[in-house]
Image 1 (cartoon, rainbow, N blue to C red):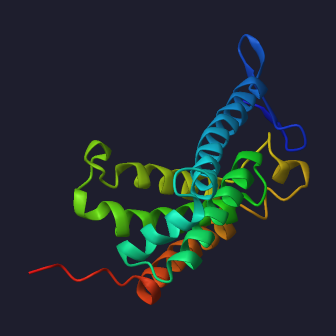
Image 2: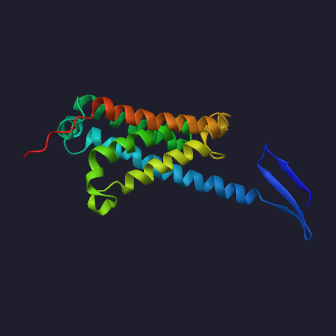
Image 3: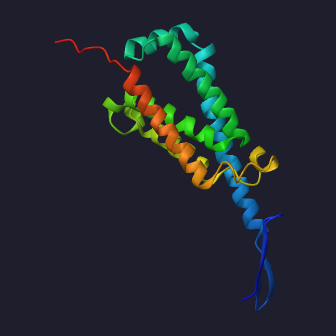
Length: 193
């Protein structure tokens, strides 16, 4: 079966017994699906960071909470977490530096899952780490696959830079960054006898 592929417009044509078949609609559907996934996950993460700055106890309350769970100094970690959540979320939603944003998702969710949710088991209804796993996996997957067609990475011709093996290495760096943060900074309070 003859095939024709043009990387520039991401069209794939196949000749079938009934005539030519174009798969550009399927490729656009994949791009639309990735845009939806990036948008929802990215804006969710950005909103989570925003609320650390501006809701409830604001950044000062978030800092006290970080201190109480053993992420010290609390102010530094509250500021770093909130800023990273907003920036990584917006970058992922836009599909800009997608692997870096995905790596940040992995690091953030590893730290959150370990420090806050690990003791509660898997399911999110019991404040477990289920949701952290979904966001980390979403970030890792998009970091490895890249943002694809409907993204700023594609518009700036960066999609091949921020995907594939390089994306995998960057996402792996996010995992190592999360582990390093836990090793260096996490000092949980001693349990009362």
